[in-house]
Structures are given as C-alpha cells and as structure tokens.
Image (cartoon, rainbow, N blue to C red; front, side, top):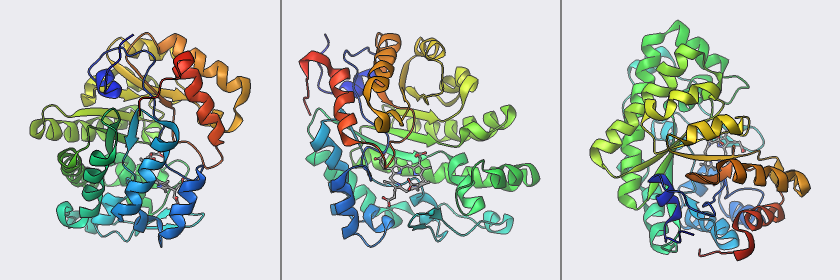
Length: 348
Ligand code: CP3
C-alpha cells in the first residue's frame, strides 16, 4: 500500500492511506504519567503553555511513547481570550475561568498583538518542527469563535452554554462583533503558527452542537469560513481540519460551508452518514473516547467497524473527542496495534 512520509498531509489532500494515519485529540494530557510529572514543574496550566521547554516536552511525550502520525502543539484554545486580557485562569478541578465580558467591553474590544502576547507559543511550534521526525505532521490549532465566545460570555464552562445562546438572542450586534474580533485574532494566530512551522491546523468548535439550525449557519459556519478565507488568502497551501462537535446533520453542508480539507466527526455520528460525508473529502474520527477507558472487546470491535466502514477512503483515525484523564495508556497501545495491524509499522 501507499507508503509516504507525511501520511496525514496525504489524507488532507484527499488521498486514501492504508492503514490510515492516527493521532488522538488531547493526546498529551493527564492520562500519561510523564505528563503529570512535567505538569508539576509548571506553576499553573498557562505557565505550561507559555514555557516553550515544557510545552515542547509534553507535545513530544505521546509521540515518543506511541509514534503517532501527528503531533498537536500543546497549548489551549483559551490563550486567545488570555491575549485579550480577559484574566483567564485554570482552577484545579474547576476548569477554566475568566472575567465575563459585557456588551460595553465587546464594543471596546481590540484584536490583540499576538506576536507580542503569544511569542512563546510560536517559539514552541518552531522548536517542535525542528525536533519532530520528518514523517510526523505538526498540527497547530485554535478554537472556533463560537466556542471561544461561550467561555468569554459565561466566564466559565456550562453544560449547554445557555449564557452565550441567550446573549446572542438579546444582543445580536454585540455578539457578531465579538465573533468577528475572535475570528480576526484566530486567523492571525493560525497564520503565525503555519509560519513558525505547523504543517496543518485544526479548528475546534466543541460547542457547535448546542446551536439551533439558523444559529449554526450564522455562528458556527460563517466565522470559521472567515478564518479559513483569511488563512488561505495569506497562505494558499495551508490545510485545515474543522471539528464541529455535535453538529450531526449540519455536517452535510459544513465542509463546503467552511471550506475545510477534512472534517472531524464525533462518536455519535452514524457510520453510514460518515461514509456519505467521506465521498466529498477526508474525514477524521470518530471512536468514543470512553473506549480508551473500557478497552477489551468493546474497543476492538468498534475500531474494526470504523476501519471497515471508513478505511477505504480518506481517513485520519482519531477519537470523537479528547482522550480523558481516566484512559488507560495500554488501551492506546492496543488501539494502534489494531489499526497498524501485522506490520506494526511505526515510522515515527
Ligand atoms: O490535544 C492536545 O494534546 C493539545 C492540547 C490541548 C489542550 N486543550 C490541553 C489541555 C487542546 C487542543 C485543547 C483544546 C481545548 N481546550 C478545547 C477544544 C477541544 C475540546 O476538548 O473540546 C477546549 C474546549 C478547551 C478549554 C479547556 N481547557 C477546558 C474546558 C479545560 C478543562 C477541562 C479539563 O480537561 O480539565 C482545559 C484544560 C486543559 N487543556 C488540560 C489540557 C491537557 C487539562 C488541564 C491540566 O493539565 O491541568
């Protein structure tokens, strides 16, 4: 079968690679003992993100252990509101918090100077591209404007992002302005990551699934389209993976709507529907992250189903959302053995 140095990039160009390349969302994280150890060396989570030495180290950890086909920059989507001086902090056991933004503050909000504010992130990207094996794709990323806005408005995560949905109904103009400022900053952020050495980028819209039909077009599709347009105007060969978690039937028009090279699929999406989407281009996903906790026959059979159904087209194997702290590292080894099969090939 096809044996190329940059399997993820090939899939993003629409090719079928067998076995499919694989990486896992949140592959650097608390399920790995080496991550927990490095994490203790940083004062807080943001210090970890803004220390190039530590950020490079935790990005490399899952590559060394498993030889994934892609490394994802270790950072967080909330560095954008942090650069906007929204007082972002990660409270142990409580998740991210920041100052909730008001209509007046949105009117005064500026696009931050990222070269100044996020210099350590770009430094980490360029060191990573130098240190990684040439066969490993380096992914940069950002959050989608809608998902970032949900945290900026509520000031923390909520089960259904009701504060942002209410805000959008009540103050549509201010809300559109907030999305526009985030989109402009995010496009600049992605261009700088590509220039520092990222091979491709992923846009995470983790909260796309709580939007109504009309709101999905306005708040999930249009702002991401703006980011992709700006990125492609500046760097025409840049490849983009767009992940709108929970988007369901809206994914039928999402790829063209945002102009992505690949779309991410969560684990709730029927595989028949996923196979239809794959006729238009590459897909990424979509194993339930809890199978990295459960393991056993349930894991084996679900992986094989995905390979059977989507393995004959352009596929980047991944989970349907981030791996959880409870995952057993042995189950990741098992997952890779099933995907890579007898050859056990690991050119990372
Ligand atoms: O995938 C990777 O390995 C790269 C690193 C990465 C992190 N966050 C590290 C992280 C990426 C790509 C993200 C994206 C991110 N961050 C998203 C979108 C993807 C998704 O999971 O839906 C969102 C919504 C966030 C915001 C965020 N960051 C939350 C809600 C939390 C707390 C929840 C939790 O898991 O604790 C974080 C913290 C965070 N970001 C951790 C990691 C490894 C855990 C914090 C720690 O180690 O103390």
